[in-house]
Image (cartoon, rainbow, N blue to C red; front, top):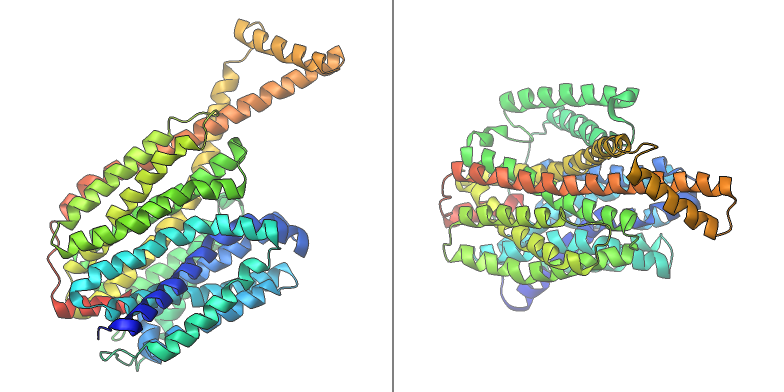
Length: 520
């Protein structure tokens, strides 16, 4: 039932704030890993599980959100999730060792995954059917703002205070969100009870997705299948997920109804949403690593690069929602969005080591516009071919594909960068040889430079070789990042004909639109 006046305003601010703090926590810890490592006496390899555990919990809970809300009541489940997220945040700040922190981050991810999906359901039902496109655009703002400001906010907190405060900051926001939800949020009139629990399905889903997410998060740093536990988890993930699919297709009351994937529109939208997650998270990963490792930017300066894009998204997403409400063809928006993301990526593929912050301004703006054009229309496409009763499960699957796309994107780009760096280094080194005029000239320059700084002839020659090696490595890294940008651009272009195969989404009737709210 739609709300009005003060209640509508309070609910809107509350659920968007809850979603944003969940999304901020996906990236805010990235700039604090070194501080955590030193403070807790852990290796960087161990402290990386702080990121991994949160991602694993998120991707496990998202497809089960609709089921859990039906089991416990959506209002109770939502408030409980906020309190779990908040309590786990405080526990993370008080952790005495790395494995306590990892365990509490997992609990935080369980609560946070529910916030992302259920907040959108509540927001949808707060608005009338005709306003739900606008509501979706408001919620999508959080999808951009949260991951974007996370590193910037984290960098400021680390510089000004200490790493536990990146978790303590959630306490007042979480308590206020829980209180306002208890006062203003109502249990939906269409709420249903899940009397039968598909325990085998839940178990297979948890084991399968948990193993797969661990492989994606840790595979690159562990050199993939050279580590025994990565091999074992890959086998466990494959067996569990295949068994899960078989189980859910024959179960009378499945925890995830996979029959909805018979819809061609949902199957295509889910595939494109996977690519959207890939592009969203991979570009948020590539740009900061590029600027910090090669250009020497601080975390704060890097975060500032994304703020203009976030500001554009805040303005642009509501415009997209209003255009959809007026009947503008969603598939045209998605095509334009992927084309613009391709332009963004290809522009960045022309940067060099002399790039300045101004060189990122327009590409980052284009990224924000392109992803804004894709996000909301894809959700409409996903549900447009479903019956009202199937829409909640369809959107839950669509949301899971975005998370999986993001995890796969970061894992793939990490591996891609390593392989391309090695290939470029091999190519560059093969062009260097003693007796080559260009090589000899550069070595002579570097040797004279070292000698001018007081080095002996032997030291000058030795340091010149070291500098030349560093230059080759720097250039190899640069070329690999440019390749990664090109890959994202080409991938976006490939998506354009795919969206045209889905046909034009039909408008949703009122009861279908209402049902769509349940699964967000």
